[in-house]
Image (cartoon, rainbow, N blue to C red; front, side, top):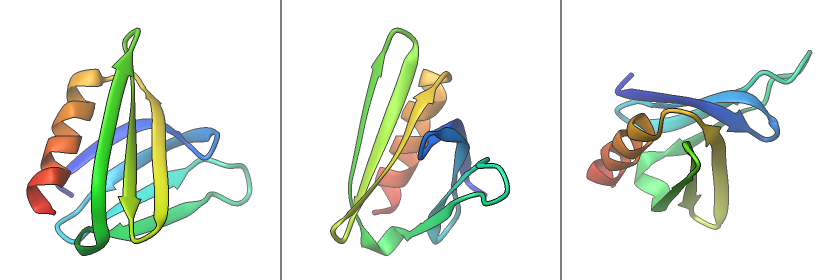
Length: 88
């Protein structure tokens, strides 16, 4: 694991985890957590924004978009985005 941010993924509490090869998104949906993975080699764009102490990151990879929002640690969010951008 290289970096981690906690927020909201697909309308449930969740995390984004950066590894050496991919970004893994998981949420806490009851009985059926949703897990998505994006290979770093397929990431085309990382966009982020912050407002009122909350941040959002949007990852675009080969035609699909994954978002983690309502992140309370804005500085950690910026560091996460920078870490991803350094690997793509």
